[in-house]
Length: 192
Image (cartoon, rainbow, N blue to C red; front, side, top):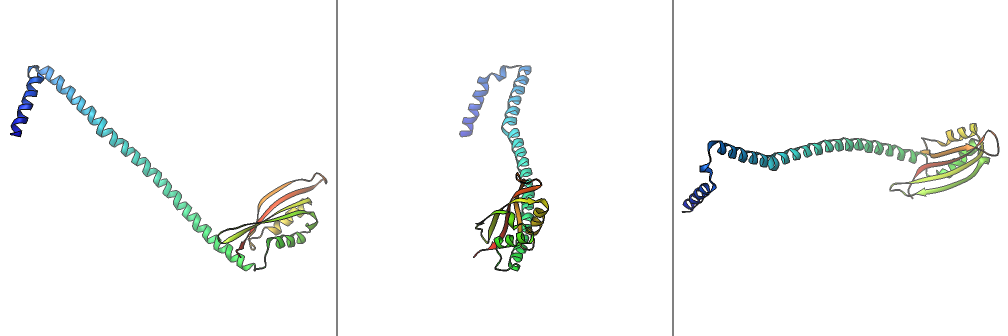
């Protein structure tokens, strides 16, 4: 009974639409219009969204590949730093438990014969997870370039894990051919 009811509705719609009264040319135009609307709707609702999604997916894949390359590079850097950290800790262990940066710098200043040019030495410490970073800011006044170079050469020590973080130099206003310099010298020490 339902199928009979549907048949009657479709037949009534067909008759009321007036399609039977159209000539062949008008029917082809109507079919072409319906085909155009169908194709346009299909294009707008299916094909374009699928192409946009595909383009977005390709862009996302390219970005993820780039991120993967960066992550792998960071991983290499991490392992490299981790191995260097092991060598740094080994060097820290080798230099002995009585090592202090302040004393080391005082000894190097004596060896380079620049102790009289030291205006000040300001020590500071930054707490770390496994190691503390110890820094001494040091100002040298009226020092010759030769003596300054000798002092820097003695201070920079891979063996003792001592390095210069910041270095500024300017010509001394008091004596011609002499310089004033500020150095920030850093090392690492075991906690405790």
